[in-house]
Length: 322
Image 1 (cartoon, one colour):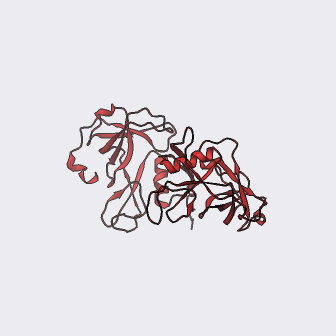
Image 2 (cartoon, rainbow, N blue to C red; image 1 turned 45 degrees about the vertical axis):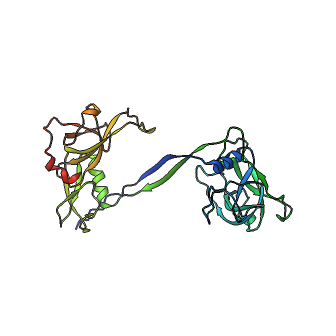
Image 3 (cartoon, rainbow, N blue to C red; image 1 turned 90 degrees about the horizontal axis):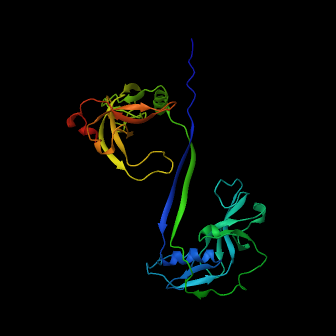
């Protein structure tokens, strides 16, 4: 008997990346501007506790907090974890320790990194101090890292002193890049779908209970919860069910705005999928318009959909897929 080996599992590196932008209130603005000026600020609560990083409102009473205090650049490690393999974008490119450091005079700890030769050089209770970045812009990275400090006690550290939080050219907003790198290995159903796309076909799977055909297939019916194994080729043409006009240009897409992104119900499918509409002015796209895929040279999926030239579909034929 001849046994056909299973196809090689698909695998692809994926990246999810976006900039997170936020404005700052007076306390956070003072904190980040202070870092730019090599000044570590905390905030005093009604109960007299000093919190760092400072917050706008008391976490216990919700009272508004505005009494800023300047702390020294030394502190004590309260807990730590060793990182033997730094990832791109982390503060140091050599092995380091993640540490919670309670700055002298503060009642809470600040999360940052400690530059140490190895885990044997790190311990809870050790004394550390800030190593300021050579170039500072008003961000937590203005603290390049913490480093071991020879002082044996916080008793000799100066008391926190009041600070008005006023600096020239204050930081009023920040942009934080968020990025997630991971490897994706699709399951049986999605692997079959991706292989069909490589052949310029679209294959879904039919539910044995409700008979709906799902594209992309998920290996199970999302409505009935039963496994799906029967493969069904759908399309290639379809119907625009709903759409939106995109007016903001994405940095990673070489597509001029405005353009249309739509839900498209492929013929024979029980679920609409996403696709860009091209080959027609954006203000002429409409619900019910019949479209067909356009494949880019060497592409593994349709680059966009264009009008097929057929009459518009009747609303009753796609209303359940809105």
